[in-house]
Image (cartoon, rainbow, N blue to C red; front, side, top):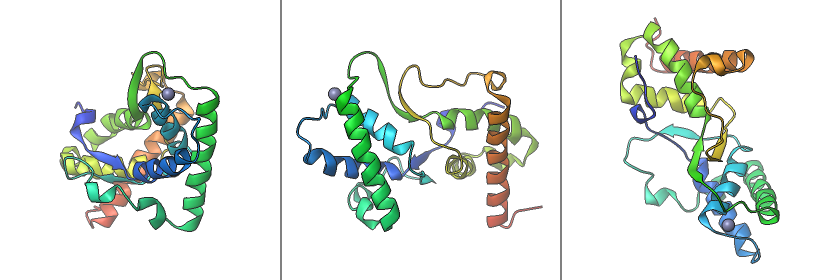
Length: 192
Ligand SMILES: [Zn+2]
């Protein structure tokens, strides 16, 4: 069974809050570069340090109405954490911008390794997990429980084969996928 990154659709809704935090910080910091590459670098740093909020994405893209006001709506501790991480990221990128060289769009490499684990696990599970909407729900749940690994470089961790991955980490990834399946089966009352 082949699963591909196109086979499901999820979005980390924390991205919008992080963008907003960076906009606020950068409006006070006139010396920092705000080119798209530096912005992506800052975003990756912040997103790797705050808990993600992945959800299945049913629409083609994130609704425009969602893009503003997300930051203020967060509870205080998380709001403060995101603002502090955004400030740290701005300082790091400002001190050492890397806006040259080949780059990739911002992405979370944790999705790749979860997909590898899912490819091994899902053939032993009910057929319906291969449907795009079920797979999207499963991946969102799993991504919320694995540390994000956002990257913008070609060098980012590339997970080609399960055999190339550290055994302890792979065991953790498998556990995350199994737990996600259990949780979703329980939630939908489909547990056998
Ligand atoms: Zn730049």
